[in-house]
Length: 278
Image 1 (cartoon, rainbow, N blue to C red):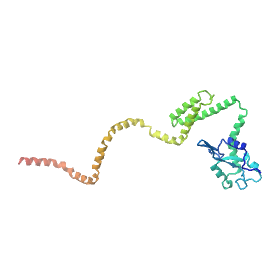
Image 2: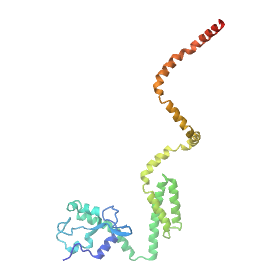
Image 3: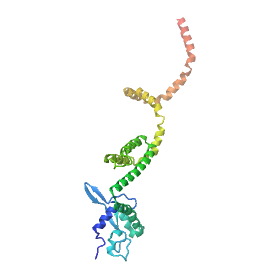
Image 4: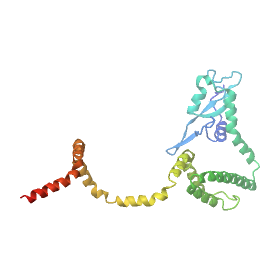
């Protein structure tokens, strides 16, 4: 009797190859194998489209155990998606759904394999050129959008792109160093769309900055010796710390002395009169 979990080595290799070493769940980017401390670790599980056992999700009675373990009935799922797909006896994830996932994941790789059967050196060169030319067009469009928000970064990437494509119509594969620069640049700029609105707002707010540079420089020069007076300012503030308590008395005294100028002339006359009769 065949064990439905006893997989053929060819089927396993086929799954890894045609899946691109990725989980079959749509848009999942989890890799089947991950390198940890230099050691390959399998972090995905084989899932049956039709259950391997009678109590499993999506069980179909009229197929053989040989068919259950065969390549057409198998997909790779990361641990998290395997649990989601099989919970509640597979409710929400039908046989047809998983078969669509399998076709969608494997079709591109199958097409490439069929296309390579009669591949010649000239045809390979042509395919590489077409692929790179398409990539050049996409990068050109991206640079145009990037230039609207960061001209310096766009100029740098444009220079790298010109260097890569200097051979004309992409007749050769790009230099690995240039490819690495592009890859790192793409990673560094991956979140740019999220910050572009903030960058645009900041540029608008700083539009008039050049007009104020001279004023800022002058203010900085005037404040250059501020540290020397800091201690004096602190001492003065401490001496004036009780000023609010005396403010009402100062105001009252100021009001009483407000008419003092009117009596100055009379006081001067009285002083002269006293001096004459001494």
